[in-house]
Image 1 (cartoon, helix red, strand yellow):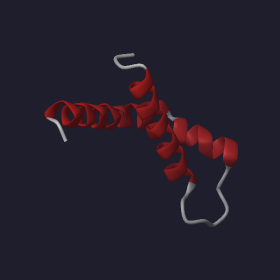
Image 2 (cartoon, rainbow, N blue to C red):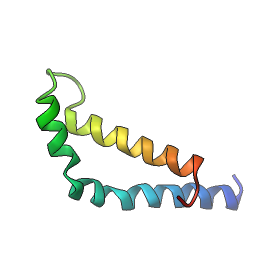
Image 3 (tube, rainbow, N blue to C red):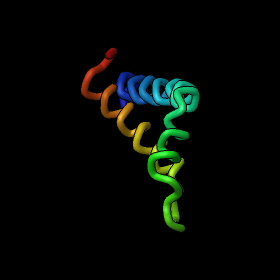
Length: 68
C-alpha cells in the first residue's frame, strides 16, 4: 500500500471519528428512539444500527465529495 493511499485512509478514519461527538451531541439517537421505540430483540440494537448508518453515510459523503 502506498503512503498516499494509507494517508487518505487515515484521514478518512479521523474525519469519521471526529464526527462521532457531534453525532452524540446532536440528539439523533434520542430522536431515533422516540420515532422507532425499541427494536425487537436482535443481535444489534437501535443505537448501534443508527450510529453504523451515520458513520457509513459520513464515509460515503467524504469519498464522493472530498472536503465537503
